[in-house]
Amino acid sequence: MITIDGGTGKIMHNGLNLAAAPMIDSWRLTSDTTNGDNGTQTSWAAATNMNATSLGTALSYDSSSGLFSFPSTGNYLIIFSARFYLDSGNDGAANIDLQVTNDGSNFFVGSMLTYGAHEGNTRSTSTGHFVFDVDDTSTCKFKFVTHSMASASDITGNSTENQTYFQVIRLADT
Image (cartoon, rainbow, N blue to C red; front, side):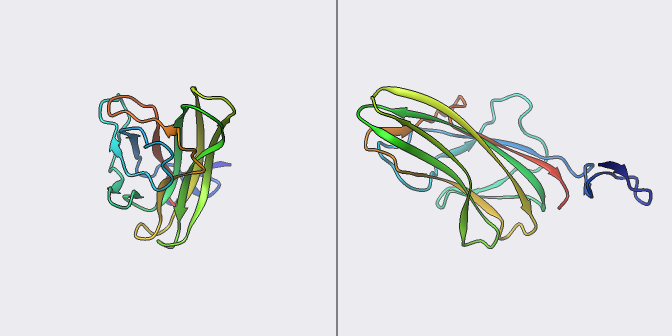
């Protein structure tokens, strides 16, 4: 239900402040994963050549750990898309997970994208999303992790176009 708080004049939806400071940030994987790479992906860069994809304060990124941090508390929508390439042979379930933590150390799968094929030279794109209630910017973080990748399977990336990419949109105050 949408209401207007009489004391503050804020537009509210089910108790969430919809007039919160807006934020949109876009990132892309800059290169293909190596064949059969299973682990945290760290080749990310801000998608700076896209129109209208950045607004407000950007995410923080630690390229050594692959961890993303939020600029402020709030409710965030993370939308991500991955392009899979299975070069040869069978790969029943190549996966990339959006993994999130509320405490800074214990991660869980917020959303998983999977593609599998029983013949080689196939491609597919999948999209997932997750709403993250960030109540502490020092402990609420996320990363992308591949697993179950066969030796000839990749997640594709490119430094100038969105093949595997994500956007984070701040929806409301927490």
